[in-house]
Picture (cartoon, rainbow, N blue to C red):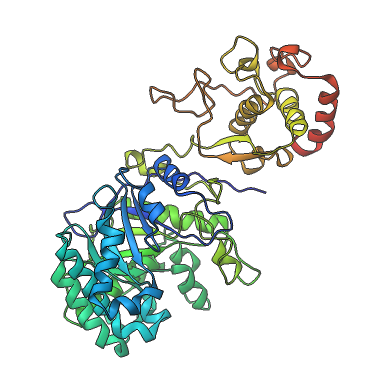
Length: 498
């Protein structure tokens, strides 16, 4: 069963007090059917995602992002780290090819030098800071060091004794790298990039961390975690880890470096040993995380200073190795269909997209025309969809083909049934889309018209009689509905959808 979800608008900003905090998304590419860069950008624009992080500096993607205004973080892949860390000229060439050649048309705002290097590639740790400095020097030479920050994403696992946060410290064996790294970040006005995964913290705690605490769910006061040294109250794992990072930096005498969370999320599906990797938990975590950033709650140590965060991730990556959960962190499938609808109704004006009205049910590409016709017949008959707009001379008659007519009937039924997952199945010939299929004067239910208002739609009552859709004459040659297909439709859809 396809589970659906409509994203978001992400428009927030940084962790510095006088900046707006933002929510961005990571874009991984381990997909068997990776969308073309122009399709990726179209999805980003449709969902008003204004901040993205790439795991490389793909040229086609950078070109597609040009002139969109989307703020882009590019990455020096781990496999290039050793060469760049040992050669200033190699770093200069990388910056020239992947930043200078695209800026300012592509709004590159930061460079991640490697990713999780200290934990996933420890033998490269000795050149990490050199690579960062060489990349920064190349930016200075190009007069871009003020516009483009340089840092490296670190796993939160390098923070030891993370609760209570006031006692947290970095793994001391990493201090020879962390000391010069933090010194660089502070001197250049950059930020500590941190990957925080409450899902893994919860899974590895053997029941010590409550699920609600990991998911940002509201806790009664007596269930909140209290730092015995500061008496600060913590209501979620995310804030505790961010503050643990602040305290760990303070332990090394660095107190002016903001934190940006470069990865955080929750998987929507897992194996038999991953029972909490579910659509509902993923929806709950990411929805609450977005609200947390939008509301500028901050953390107990730094209240009111929101932490900019990149959600992991835009797409489900079906070719990613590892357990089932590794393939299911995405907000969207590769075809752009949402995995679930984020619960963002409380975010008010901060969200430009009305997530309660911006998904549509349309015919699936390549669907069998006879199956589509049978589904159309069912929707406009037993399904009690008001199909009169499909009559000749009405707004949705053209184009006069089964796909266009099925799109309208499917979407009307889908909205009438409250956009439940199984209301857009039609025995496998329908799919959820975030693209508005309205055209001309034919406005689909939930569509935002040219004037920005919702398209008119009144769902017929499920208790209404067939006369509600009598304008759609099932024998009318204008709509080319044949009685044989009608009978077939009843046989196929009577069991599935009644």
